Image (cartoon, rainbow, N blue to C red; front, side):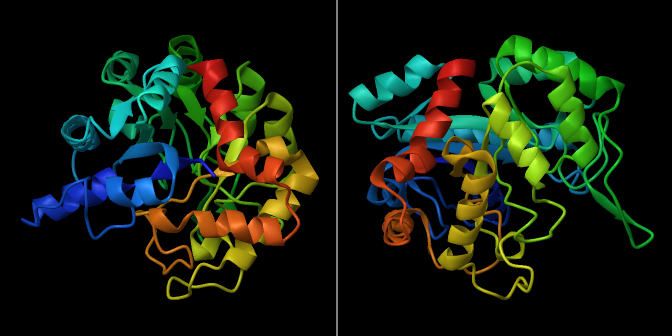
Length: 321
C-alpha cells in the first residue's frame, strides 16, 4: 500500500542534532523517518515541514536553514527521492521508481507578515504552509488558553487574509492545522480551492483544541480538502499523556468517526513523525503497512485504505499543484 504522509518534522530534528554536533542525515538515521525506512514502508511521498518555533530565535533564519538542509539532503539522495514542485514531478518520480519530497512550512511567522517573503519561499520550493503554530503571529491566532479559558474566536489578521489570497494564486496549499477555529472559518469563507489540515484529528473523539470539530470536518470535506491523521497520543485519546503510547485502536476510532462525518475522501495521513515525543505503536516510517493491515481487519476495504493512504492527498495535489 503506497503511502503519502502530509507532515513530519524530520528536517528540524536533523538540524537540531547537527547543532549539537551529531552529524545525522536523511539516508539512514535514528529518527522515525529516513530514506531506508520510507522505502521499507512503501512511501510514495513525504511532506517535510520546515518547522520553526518563534521562541527559538529568528524564525526567518531558522526556516531558511531548514529549507537549505532539505534541498541538500534530497540532492544527496537523488537516486531515491526527488523534490515536488508540480503534480507532474510526482508522476516523473514514480516513473523513475523514486519517492517524492514536498516542502512545507510550519509556522507562517517566518514570513514576518511580508508577502514578498512568501513569494520567495515559493521560489525555494515551498508548496504548503500552516499560517500559525502554537502562538499568535502576524497572520493570525491558534486556539489558545488565556487565563485558564479556551479562546477559539480569534481568527486571521489583515495580513492573513492577504496571504491566503496569494497562496491560492501561487499554488501553495493552505494548511489549517494549528489555526484557531475562527481562522478555519475565515479561510473557508475567503478561499475557493481545497485546503488541508495536514496533521489534525477529530475533536469529538479526543477533545484537544488542536483537533477539528464535526462541522469543520464536514466543511473541509465539502470543499474537497483532506485532513491527515496525527499519531500523537494526546490528539488521539482524551486520557493520554506524553508518556503514553499512541495506539492504532485510537487511530481507527478517529478514522471511523471522520468517515461517518465527512466521508472516506476527506481522510489522509499526517503522522507528525519526529515532531511528537510519545511512543508510537507504529514505531517509524518502515512500519506503516501494519496500519493498513489493521484497517482491513477493522472492516475497511482495500479501496478505502488506498484512499486514506495516498489517493485522497494525491488527488488534492493534482488539483492545486
